[in-house]
Image (cartoon, rainbow, N blue to C red; front, side, top):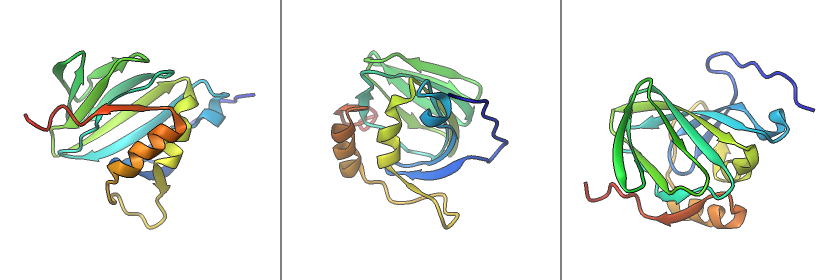
Length: 159
């Protein structure tokens, strides 16, 4: 049975995501009986995601700080501090950080995509906030877990 979860600023398990970014996990699927996954994502400027979708998970992104360009349905949209984006399951999307730095709050429902993020990240033990980006390994984990389907390269490469 799930119980209340309260995390102060900066609290939560810190994991370096292989696609770039430092995650601070606020609510794990195990904390919520699988109903959701929530993490804060600290990103450097220029970070991009490949065009991807989640077949069984809805994804919401709240921009805490900075600016991203989100592409969904083939249209790029700028989302700045205080902005919000929602990609329902099955909708292809990608984003690129256009500010020097960005902090996002990512919310996924249900929390079944957690297996992808666990396998595609490493626990931060030395306090570092960056690490190597490994899109090849990320792609293999996406296939293995089935939680994310990579559809193609970042749509921002030619912009």
